[in-house]
Image (cartoon, rainbow, N blue to C red; front, side):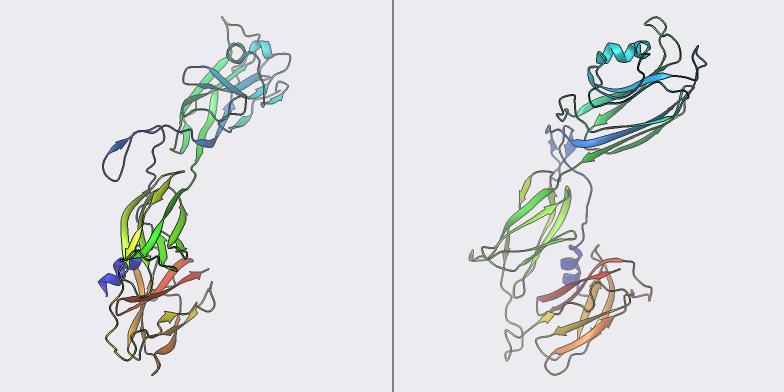
Amino acid sequence: MNRRLLVILGSISLIVLTICLVYAEQIITPAGLYVYQTRNIDGSMTFTVRTVTYNGAYGPRNAGAIWITNGQNQFVKTLKVWASQYRYTLVRWLASSGNNTTGAVTSASLNSHQLHTVNWNARNLQGGLVDDGNYTVNVEFTEHNASQNNPGKYKTVTFSKSLTAIDQTYPNETYFRDMRMIWAPIVPNGTLSGSVVTTNSTPIEGAIIMAGTATAFSAADGSYSISLAPGNYDVTCMKDGYHTESALGVAISSGEITNQGFILESVVANNDPSAPNAEFYLRSPIPNPFHDSALISYKLPREESATLRVFNQRGQVIRSLELHPDRSGSGEIRWDGRDRSGFAVSAGIYFAAIEIDGRIAWQRLIRY
């Protein structure tokens, strides 16, 4: 197998897609340096809890509230209140919120206990995104004329509002069951941009830049831009007639622009002196997307045997097909959607590529 081709197209895939951002946390960058940076992560929190009777004077009828406090135990927002004339029994909630129900779901007290589901959009009373840090979900309910000296039942669950997603279940307790916390941060993409030029700084138009499964083409001035999820990427730049270049482990951070330029060196003319600029390409597969098989037409610089290799998104060669063009270098071949072991490949994105004399022609295939 041509090792160079494998290395080049292997970088089509996202090699490392691990979150490596710097949001109010200590992280290690690819260079091994510790970085600190403070930002406010957007996202949503969902919490479920089922209250259980304690056989109070009015049980199973109950009043209750669920609210958010910050790391300093300061009130942030009420999420739900099921009480009207019995709100006075919710002594903890009243002390924290001052009876504030802005944006909350409210109702009368309930005749029986049930599963409560609340959602929080990481906003405060004024609608502003709150700072990152620890936040607490407070749950209080009563079945009697509660007071400060004789309060109802109370439960707290604390979570970290940060880049890290949370999906946590909690052991059942006597009065609180079926508890689950989900924190889903919203992580904006970062941008990879730069320019592609020749060794004498002339812009190259139409170069292909690949990072993971994302692809862009350089503009007339050589510039390109790709929106990418945060993570580390191996980025490849290729253009017919030029040697392919790769940049490994390029770190993309949320909301930031990472610059990565490429300088491509011209390929020395092929060893056929009669056709130094001969046509060389793969046509778009037919059909594409495909299910059973796809027909791929090609044009080689000359009549000679060659190999078309099919790669998955991880850069692994899953099938090699021998090409036997006619005297003009033209031909076509059908890929049956199977790997080298004869098994049908799963639905997804694949790449077909040929390399001849340092030149690469490729096409993307989508199997459904």
